[in-house]
Length: 174
Image (cartoon, rainbow, N blue to C red):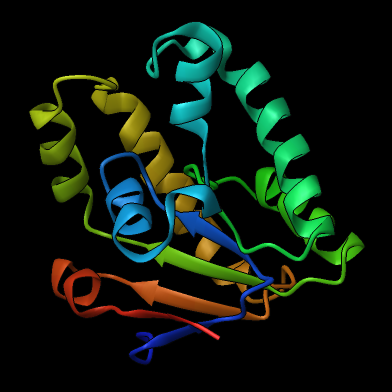
């Protein structure tokens, strides 16, 4: 995996799996590069279900709703961007299976920023602040996933490892 080319070409019928620890900037990246109707956000779905995006008791329901919406979007050939940590292999496997079933390419955009940046951004949050231990765990899970990521079945993996990488990245829907 190398730093991504610019622009990042994304097929209009693709599944885009954003990956990164909380605080890495996935939601900001999604809002900057994709239309609001293209993004399936676990936080937003928790908010829809429980009235509070940080209500972790709604996580299971939020992901059930995310998977249902994802299947429907992929069946229609719609660009589908999953905005969640996706740092565990089993979570990515569910997404990749859905893309495969519908014959859609799956692209991973990995925001592998330093842990210190994720922790600092988390502390600045007014809402959705997580315990530092949770972010450390997510960051470790992402690091543990990196060596095997290429074998999981993504059509392409774009790796953003610094704030500069994120700032200069451009997405082009093809």
